[in-house]
Length: 86
Image (cartoon, rainbow, N blue to C red):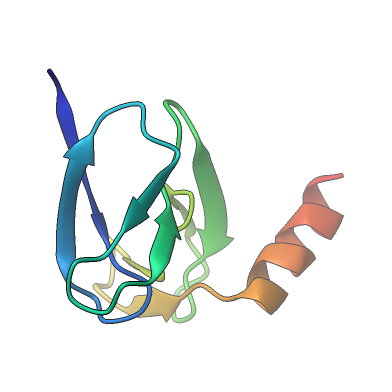
């Protein structure tokens, strides 16, 4: 059985789950997290240097590999990106 990891959106605990699961309930805060499927990635511009960043869909934030700035990903950012990409 293959495993994957994600960060809980509630308490930011690292969770390990069976690859292929669609949701993962955190054992600490009991929030249900949506597990990204294979090849489900999202894009956002770095909040500092505007470099386009790719990250696993559902992640709460992404760290820029160029300037090391941490960009928080929220619903409004995703909405803007969907509008931009469509």
